[in-house]
Amino acid sequence: MGTAGTLIAVVFAVAGVLLYLQVKTIFEVPPLPKLEDTWWGPRAPSREDTAIKPFKINVSDQILKDLQQRLANALPFQAPLEGVKQNYGINTNLLKDIVEFWKTKYDWREREKYLNQYPQFTVSVQGLKLHYIHVKPVEAKGLKVLPLLLLHGWPGTVREFYEIISLLTTAQKGRDFVFEVIAPSLPGYGFSEAAVRPGLGAAQMAVVFKNFMKRLGFEKYYIQGGDWGGIIVHHMATLFPEKIIGVHSNMCFVNSPFTNLKLFLGSYYPSLVVSKEFEDKVYPLSQKYAHILLETGYMHLQATKPDTIGVALRDSPVGLAAYILEKFTTWTDPTWKDLEDGGLTKKFTITNLLDNVMIYWVTRSITTSMRLYSETFNKAQFGLQLERIPIEVPSGCARFLNELVYQPESLLKERFKNLVHSSDYDGGHFAAFEVPQVLAEDLFIFTEKVEILSKPDQ
Ligand SMILES: *[C@@H]1O[C@H](CO)[C@@H](O)[C@H](O)[C@H]1NC(C)=O
View: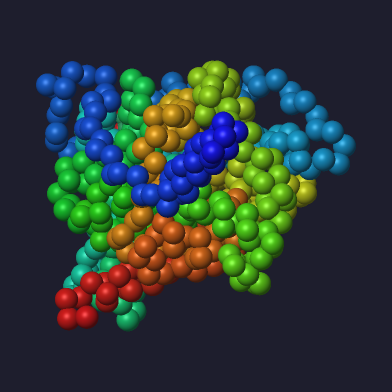
């Protein structure tokens, strides 16, 4: 063989090895990482007070007076362009009406009573004082009581769960089980303390909530979440399968090289990926990606410079409301962008929406809430490759058709190896808040399946 021949042979050999490594990484499952019980709080570890303490929301008069002053002193809004509705962000004519309602009709002291209707507690875990709602079923005679951890996301709070909690903790006709609900505020959100040092991403929150449930005395339990809550419960199922009886989410997704390849091939043969009925939820990919790009500017910002935008939102209640409420229009229904009033009152009340905004405002937690993006979208967290490790515990996925990303079972099964239940519903991103009955019923159906499957005589 001549020099040229040798060279070609070497080039082919190298190319072959590279291709092999590439293909191998597509199919290879990364090892399960071991995460530390990091101390996130401001106090010294020796001073961890492990007691569970009752908690009531009771905002000071001073915070409320300051809010009224800021609302009264807000500069007049920039008028929207003619006819644009919500297409340049929230329409300030809509915002003006909301702020007027906030100033004159919204009564926080009344809402505080509403928010305090469920028993709430705090407990310190890894140095963070965490706030949570804990509701046991009223009437559970003869029923199996199943503990359920419910996790919210951004820009949500535990307020999203008030309607669904009563449904989940009420005995259902024909069902021999009922839930005991534990709904914490994520670290850095609402009434839970925030980390004082970098690194508390979604994976580390999974560790915090595993330890939190242990502290509450639960060895095995169900978990449910959407948005960040969904990401965290899936990490819990990946990292601590022995703790989880079943994991249910209204935001299931897979993100692996193989899935992306399949999605791409599906552009040519959609039936490989998705049934005819839901084809337009996945394809054409270019349209889907354009839509994702249009709706995720906030994510890039929060994943890179949360503290900068945080300064503005923390200082201005009208700015905070604009930033949060915009998400409740477009994420609930993208077509609401073309409505004068953003469609908000079709599914929510302004009072309920303001409860959620108020929890961010009175706790001054918008900046720390947004940091979850920076702490998760980074090299260290991506390096864990948690999303590529299959989830073996029984899983349920409720797909709401207005969710940003739609993934059919053919894709979900790459990650959810034990997908016992998945279904499609009308509705959007904030399912618990928007359609509590639908989400509760899906959770009951899923749990029924898991309970039957886990009976020893099956
Ligand atoms: C809230 O706190 C104030 C002053 O600290 C107190 O007088 C009031 O009784 C508290 N309200 C509730 C509902 O706990």
